[in-house]
Image (cartoon, rainbow, N blue to C red; front, side, top):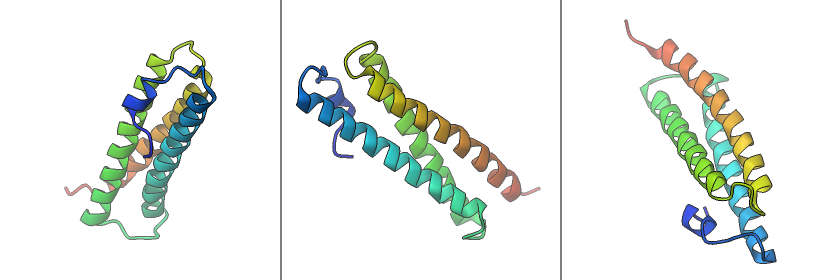
Length: 116
């Protein structure tokens, strides 16, 4: 990602450049989370057959979305009721929905793979 959590915690939203940085950060976070969700969906849709390698890919994608979500929560708390709060909170909500979807997909894949 082009911008980091540290970057997001030094901007206030009072300058045009701050809003641009926040927009890029949020867009990058959503794009990255969507990419990871798409990886898991492709396994669930049988674009690739579930095996240990594919389950590992799904687990990595799930961990990535969890990490992005946690980062967005941190940024959201920092900018709570600030000039950038709406933009960050909108991105956080989208990523939270993706996380819910990925958790359900991963659980079903993991149950299919479980060895008895």
